[in-house]
Image (cartoon, rainbow, N blue to C red; front, side, top):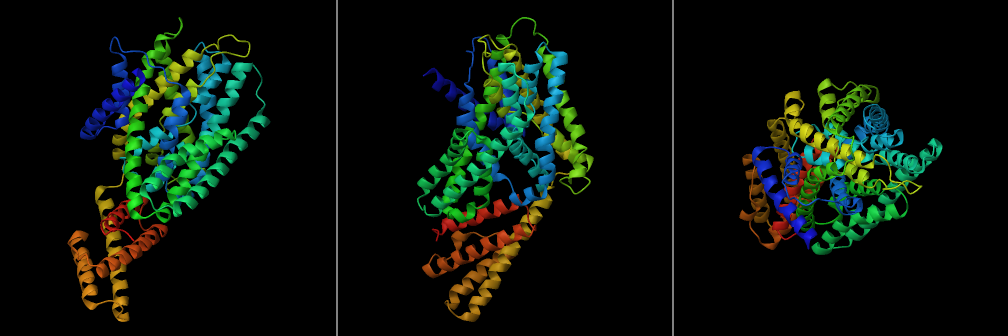
Length: 514
């Protein structure tokens, strides 16, 4: 009962914080972490202990799946080289830098310093997606930042397993074996995710019940994670691959009514899970600090030094992006480099990894430095979420790479005009065939012309007779095809495509669907 009360309290707190965050235009994750930290410092607040399996199994899969579904596969093909450089090389460099710094500044033994470096080596997709959701970044830059955080899991997970094995068993690193484990984690996770995506697509094509389709959508990320982990591969990679593939083909798997319902349900689930998990990060830090042994009082300065080192190594690594073909061409500007650097926050996944560190070594003795690793990990996560999270939007605005509202509005208006003109062309063709009553064609032409002239139109004002309705649904299907063509031809962004797709889905749903 106490656990249920704590979760309900976190949900209420998160709802209130998110309301104020939207009003003050502050990133909700940053404000949630601060709120959680403030609550934990209130005298009498009970200590919070979260099992790592709870975060890894309950929280991560749907959040990762939602992030992967938002990823533009079209733009990902354009930035795969810099994503590879960041997801592999930067993770290794960050782990080495943090490990060396931890040996120099902290009382951690070298093996546990390596564990700390592996835990903090990769950026967090949940935090990156949550912070970047409201930013008007160009499509390729947004995909670069998001894809890096989604695809660096296999690298950091192999490093973490190697580091924990060395710390627990006091063995030496066998790099060929580690390389084989990386192939197994990344390749196996990819295969499991792709196979599950194929199976889910097969089922969803034959499902017409909105409730069943929503349940399938909710279960999919958990199934991908559990199946991959059971096969001793990367569950995170499997969830990401399944999300990217199903997100790409989602418009072909269900009708408008089902898509709208699934989106609404997922929006609620993502809000609740993000709110709770970011609050937990703030609540955890004071609890972990109380468990620190004597002689570790310098942890705030140590965490600050590690956070600065992570930013520094990220800045240096960004200089390698021109050779890999950056997001803005072959010579990305310093503005793009600054934004990509500052967007690399840590979050939920490092915390879950740190919590999963074993309590004892092979000989049965307590693992030295585990408490300090937990505190430093959580402190660095809090620092990046608060400092980088609160300043990321101003940096993007000052960098000059943010898309202006006028640009986005103009792109959307141009795309709407293109859809309307395609519909009018189709009407002209139908008029020549004389297969429909002239009055129905005239009404539809008048409706589309008014929308072209005014930039708007309300389907509820149109006639609802069966012939008109069937014609309107035929027009919407044609406009869906035209919308995908505009997107595939790089004439509109993924954001504009999703917004117009949602409008077409709402109109189709209002007409009763096909």
